[in-house]
Length: 191
Length: 132
Ligand code: SF4
Ligand code: SF4
Image 1 (tube, rainbow over the protein chains, first blue to last red):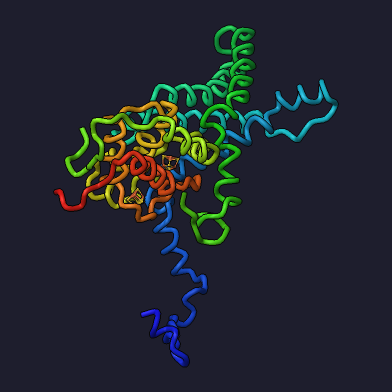
Image 2 (tube, rainbow over the protein chains, first blue to last red; image 1 turned 90 degrees about the vertical axis):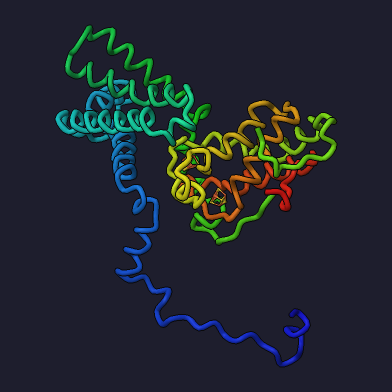
């Protein structure tokens, strides 16, 4: 075969491409989405997206945190109204409950879950749950507030040591390291 | 127990733990990070045709690497022959390295399985294709 190819004047027939095959059209976009993880698990991905958006945005724009920032550093970001952050916290907690139930009831998740997965989920939920309780003055306010701070700190400290590193490495893995699922070139080098 | 098609040379001999450790060390950074980043979310399940055809969690890409490469790193390479044969069963029989699995975090799953195969082969554990 190689011999044939090496003969002078031999060239492979040109690959015929359908006209406009690599153009992004409405049709092939819907095809792409259907084949993507969003198309395959639409429910989970929707809940997951809402979960992560609330997780990242809520603590930054909550009024109480910005008050504290202002008190200690004399500067603060703008804040959402308390009604908005309250709703976002509730939405977050509902999404977290979805993840918890999914882990408990789906056989495929049970197969790869360990105690550690529950601990990490617990760490992510607790700052929000205690914040919610504190805002509504349920239980003893001082205790709940201290717990809120402790869990918030614990969660932040746990990031580099647990699977919470995916907060940072999601972006690196997906968009920087070159493999076929990133914006890089589609080639993989095996060990 | 490993399937009978997982053959092993020198089956009476212990595996060379130091040799395994050396391979694990050489790939530590990427493998450890991949194992840590994995959120155990199971979203990669449907990307493997072996899972979609069996609906058996042990064919999930993440299940495969957690119980092969993941196990090796957890044990720091200290594994006996029976344990490594079981890993051989996973990496040779439950994955064909078609590289179609997809992880939203971009974890290179076939790379991990391939490393599992490399370690098994280095200890004389491989798939025999003429045995059912
Ligand atoms: S490999 Fe990726 S998709 Fe699969 S469970 Fe781990 S994080 Fe989820
Ligand atoms: S490479 Fe292995 S785990 Fe990935 S899709 Fe193919 S058979 Fe499944």
